[in-house]
Amino acid sequence: MEQPSSRSQDTRPGLISGVVELAKNSFGLLMSRIELAALELAEVRTHMLQLAALFALGIIVAFFAIGYWTVLIAYLSWPILGWKILLILAIVCTVAAAGILFYIQSLIRQGKLSMPATMQELRNDHDALL
Image (cartoon, rainbow, N blue to C red):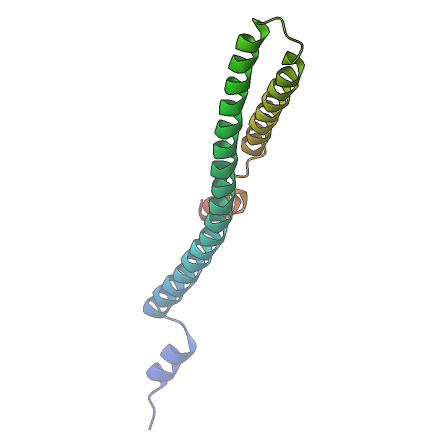
C-alpha cells in the first residue's frame, strides 16, 4: 500500500526539483545567449575581413596617389605639356583613397562591428533578474 505522504510529495514540487528546474532553465538561457553571440561574432568577423581588405586596398591606392603626386611635381618642373595626364591620374587616385577612407569610417559609424542583438538580450536578462 502506498503512503499518503509519498503521494503528496509527488504532486507538489519540492525544493530540490525547483532548483533542478531553475538550473535547467538557466542552462538553456545560457546556451541560447552563447548561440546568439556566436552568430553575431560570425557577422562581426565578416565585417572585420571586409574592413581589413578595404584598409589594404586603401593603403595601396594611397601609395599610388603619393607616387603620382611625386611624379607630377617632378614632371611639372619641366615645361612640357604632357604633365596633364599625370595630374589626372594623381587626382583620380587621391579621390579613390579618400572615398575608401570615408567608406571605412561609415562602416565604423554604422556599428557593423558591434553585437546589438546580443547586448540587448543581455540587458533584458539583467533587467529581468533585478
